[in-house]
Length: 86
Image 1 (cartoon, one colour):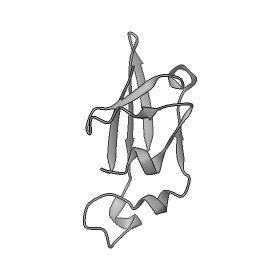
Image 2 (cartoon, one colour):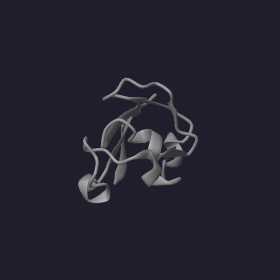
Image 3 (cartoon, rainbow, N blue to C red):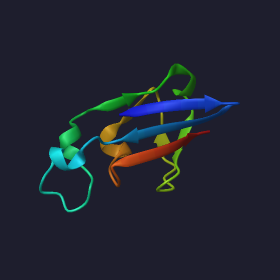
Image 4 (spheres, rainbow, N blue to C red):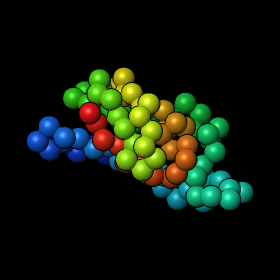
């Protein structure tokens, strides 16, 4: 599940794994193995497609939109992502 919000030029993108334990019952942390996503991407709205995205929760700054975000990278560390579009 993912959504984006824009207000007064500032933007946020949120993505979450719905029911992660039902996807991988052997996991020790509530995140899904990278292999499970198998090329799944979150499509960004056109007004955010070319903006740099920074993870608020993990301080990763290497998330570039380019129109889509690979879920395997987006949710690699946690089952939720909060990104600021700059």
